[in-house]
Length: 425
Image (cartoon, rainbow, N blue to C red; front, side, top):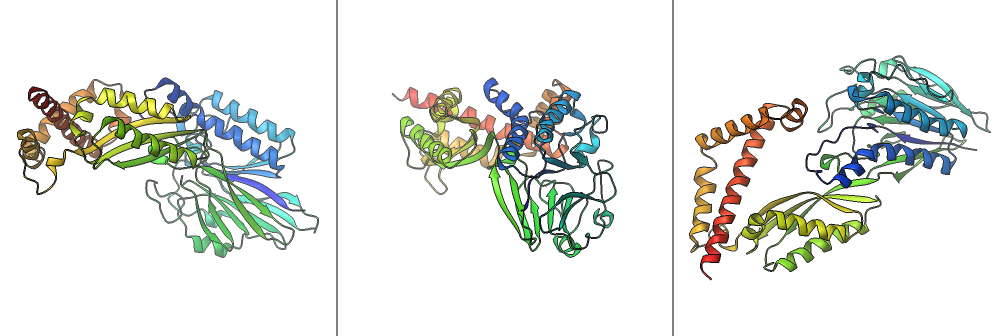
């Protein structure tokens, strides 16, 4: 007999859409419902594998946005596990601590939610007579600047001990420092497995004992790219631990960058894009792949792609649709005409103007201030929640202004190039 469980974290149920580029209503519906579908699939996996327990290492919810409807959906899924005799162990993460309904919902009897002090809960007694204990500590509030490791009890003697902790460890890019501790400190504590949460990218930090950050089961935007899943863990009577990664996500975000150097025909460009979509689709387990496509390189199509951006978007959307489950979140253009290459002699006056814009206009302080003023004026006309998404801080406003200047100049130059070309025929 063994003890088997699924380890997950950071579901962020019903998290609001964070990408303004998801303008396609069907795609928006897929992403909006993906976090719920991830939980459904996790429960399905638990039932199919006939595991003993599901461990959720924090951030079930997404902070103060949580509604009672979200919590009732969670309760319904956990009831499916209760009816199958599968236990559930939950610790609260920093986002759960912000939720208004975290402390109000009554969950099934087989679900244990850990409090702010470490406690050992008997999960199962194996045939060998060894007990399996789950230890967990929840966030009492949204911030934990100190390590929570001192809150854990010592390992139960002659038993298998599994710890649950929501932590950033020593820190991770894109994540605030929460309940900091080192992998070495966790290993030294004496537990047989550490079920972590908080960082959205999967990583197995150690194997003796296992210290596992499963990553989130479903990404929500391009900054949470690549496939997502959960960890299936088996602990034998002798205490040997083995792990498997299982894909869960309904949709995965991916970045694709294509160099169009040497591609001069519109149809060839679309074929290049289609082949890249197909190759990615064939290696992705998720039902849907959502691409952010960047087109680079020196190509005669550069000006036309900028000038006819609406046509480009429509045709690439059509290419994606032909590959079943492929979607385009955003297209970024970083192409240039062959005559604009560094060191080339520019016979085309528009290319010469483009070089001047890049070297003299865009870096100019006065130009940047003008663009920033225009961006700030536009932001004031947006709803407060949308302003918060677009410009959460001053650096974001600077980036918006810079991107607006670059893309605006590129659009104007593309139209000039197009008109010059038409006039010469």
